[in-house]
Length: 379
Image 1 (spheres, one colour):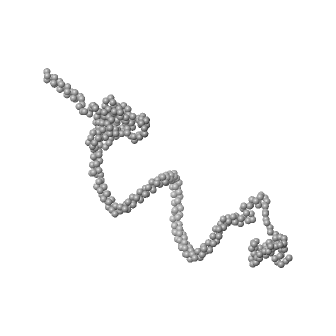
Image 2 (cartoon, helix red, strand yellow):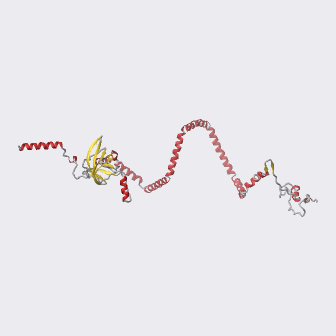
Image 3 (cartoon, rainbow, N blue to C red):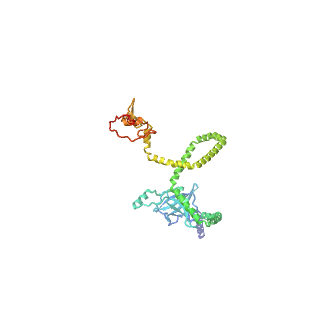
């Protein structure tokens, strides 16, 4: 009887063992954060979860805020169910990444905020900012676009091995040695080059707006040329006959240019030969030009009067009015004036005629109608 009871109990133990998994990670372990009634569930989608297992921790800012409750696969993507503490307020746009605590340590889910933390100045502004931020709620689902994976240990070791084996370290040694050889005894020149390069970059930075404007103008020019491409092509085609004509007259053009050079040589010889006379003429012109410069302000007015005699341009409208003209004249009918003007020559008033000697006139004591022949001995 006792043997039958032991056999029955052994069979039950074996049966229960086959139906139930004895793996610790297949069950939620007691004492994990967020697994009781004080937590909420969020499902996060990953492309890959590497070696992440249930009961792994969830951390934000290096503080544990939850536990990985389970992992499943759907549509070739991993669905990770997280149990988070109610006190953990996670923004809806936060990112989830699978990291590793140490080089050979366990993996965990790292939660980080997508934007920079707000820096409000008061408690009320902190509360207002928290209310405006959308928070993950129970049952929320985080898309794969907000998830990722940090480099694993094997990836880091593989990259280091690639760098050490085929990463070109020997070439780097050759480059550094050649660079040291090139800079040997040229350190001051190299420093000067670096300083000048820095100055050039500073000037370019100061004029970057002008450079941008020049590039924009060049872009507009290129756009205009592209727009008139057909016109430019036709113009180039039309230039071809002219170029052929120039090619045919090439010998004549060469002769003309050669003779022009010879003419220039002769002109140079003439100028050198007459250099003294030319300088003397220029020196003689100096007083004349100086005098003209002194009366330069009066020349325009004098020309205005001299070129429009007898009707100056300024008074033409006063002299000519429609079909008649006004004439104002001042006549000097004094005997001495008439005698000096008509009987002694036809020179300008106040100047003696050619070959005549002008004497100083004596004021007449008689009336203005004196004898016309007084200077001839009459009267």
